[in-house]
Length: 153
Image (cartoon, rainbow, N blue to C red; front, side, top):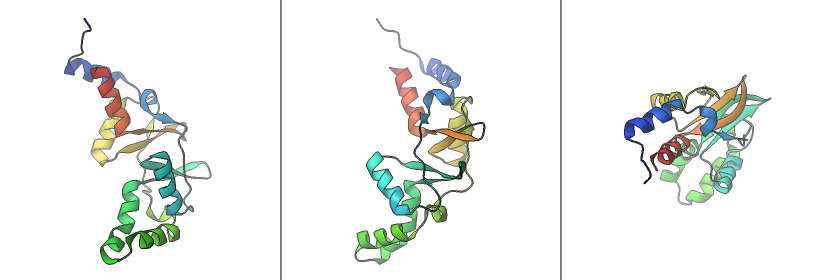
């Protein structure tokens, strides 16, 4: 018979997990001068919800699907041809105009529970992972939930 962890045991194991064990490595990035249309294509093709924004090797922001929805919301209310208006907005808007510039980050050696605290405190779904001021990954709320579910089975 396989023993199942109790909720308390799962929490203890989860507290010991490091960010580097859960994060996605080899993160795709965009630059501030790219069009939002490029971002939308990446989101659709790669099934991503967040992309770090890097300029000259430095993390300068993060852009999410929510950011894209935010810039087209008013146009969707006012326009007849929503898709045409959205495409025009996406093509004429640069990433740097809509990205979040004050990015919360975490180090690879931090505990996953700290990443979860940051996400809860700042209402984030993704946190870039840094090592010596270099972007090395991205940890998302989905990564944390997947880890918890794996420990539960």
